[in-house]
Figure 1: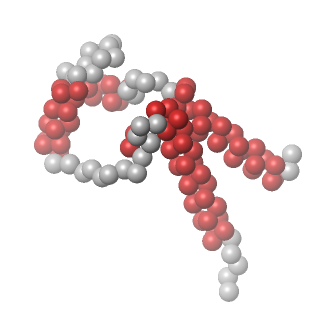
Figure 2: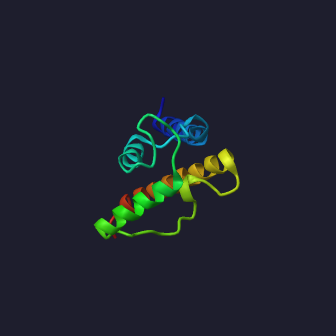
Length: 116
């Protein structure tokens, strides 16, 4: 397999993974987030139910202690397009993957230019 075909196969594989990820991912929080909410009483250690009010209170307490209240408005919050469900997640992840590929391509082109 030549270099160009290897690159194309890698890009196609990355895009397939990006599109299928929302349909394969767990709907439950990751381990770190789950442990945080369990430690602050927003959920049971082995349960999946999250008390939204307790979770918001825990986040406010931590922000008050650390002084870190950084936030920003995301174009695609939670890696999704609001109102589109799983399809919105797939489109958002696909757009992000293509943006990263474009950025990497641009950097590679700029870095490979000969000195003038």
